Image 1 (tube, helix red, strand yellow):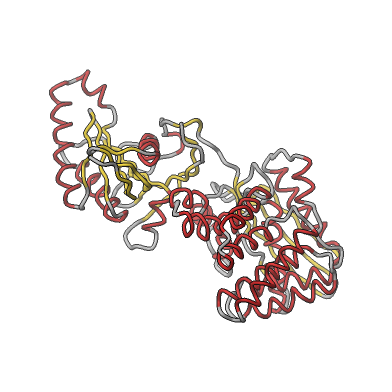
Image 2 (cartoon, rainbow, N blue to C red):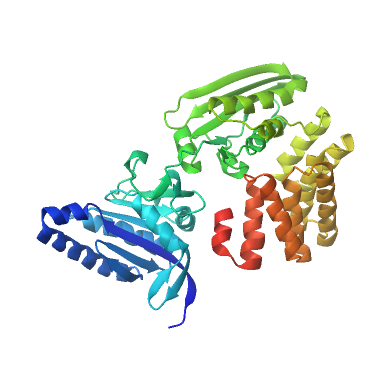
Length: 468
């Protein structure tokens, strides 16, 4: 039979404690495994899946739909809670598989087995790839267990537990799976700082400070930082810190406020432990606006100290790096970032502020990078003549690299330009890879590389998923 490749949802299921059960009562153990297999055969068929293999006390099945798989797993666990009860754990993952003579092979199979192995009786665990497929569908409640480094799996994988349905949600200490180590990743989300000024127009300033802190912390190799888009979804919401931590899969949250009056600033910042809601660190800064860069540096360095992060000299230089000494140019840049993030017609407004920032400081590399990105967006949205906007984007990105080759943003912009305008795949890949090489935690670089190149050009969906 010819080999074939296909995208599939894998479900691993096994009985916990089966060996001990056999030693204690062999007849009961055999009755249990037969009941286990009968239920699987019925439910997998009901939810349009296919059982590939039974192995001892376990089962490997495949499905074509993530929602069907998760529903099937939840119903199976409800079945196994009834008499005669069966202590079962289930793991689910989605990816590319190789089908050969009725057997399946591939990393996806290995990863599913690893995920299932850290479960407890009555649990359904699934990977981030499955979570993305079902997150907008009703009836699924998920809890992040964090990121795990599994044996023979190169990248850490975030694992989620299905809750509700009377299912068990494992604690970290429950795991006894096939992992290298339970990776306690130091992680943080920086929420939008609250604008406490009387002037609502100063909102760009408070947003900008939070965004700059995110960008500074993203340079740290041993700290996972939630991206701007993820963190800013909580803007204006009185969200519980525990809910924020669970949704963003982070252990700490930085929140704060900004009051700007004339040349005076009052900035407060609090670093909070998600698990118990207590403050790890807090500070209030009453300074002149000219001290803004020093305040941002102090907040970033205080976080590294409180989280006990070891800073390499290069990392210290990056998180305290000042990209312009011109305060007015920096203020214009923050306004530009504020408007470009709002998308739509606001991008045109952002371009004006980026241009003014460049005029105030012709050596301000970040402003050129921002203007490159804005031009790509107006071309994509049809807000300007695409050819002219794309050519301007390339020119601005190349200028930014000339001024500061350590920035990831302009390489990402060039990758987008070559992929979506020139169709120069070699240059697109080179620039996207350079973007994430310069800063491995640059979220936009990973997203653009995954979607605009790996998925759309090479069709490497598994690899794209790891970057996306």
